[in-house]
Length: 134
Image (cartoon, rainbow, N blue to C red):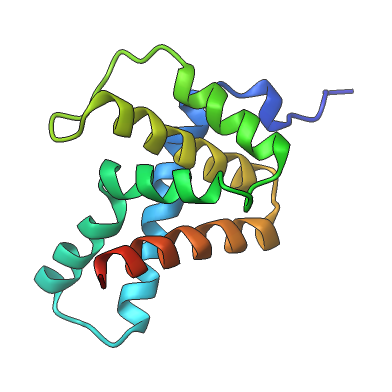
């Protein structure tokens, strides 16, 4: 009998890899549902949400009481993981924090925890949107 995989068996970098795609898909869906249909404008708006600085800002805010202890632990583990790659446009601290958010999203997605995934991604998007409206 094959052992069931959980995200504890998956490296945080791999979780961030899938989480990056999942988060971007949610952002793109939200933007299209807002009524915008020009691909160039959609891209410009999407970048505001998916860039490392925005994700870092969002995860810092979510770590202030929104996330569970286990979720914060996963974010910190991903943030502290040694990385070979780095964003050319973001500082290392923001890049690592963004990786933490992506790993959390990836973990929730891979575990099939759709309700919590929607809460976390929705709150991250709300945080970024409220910051950009200031």
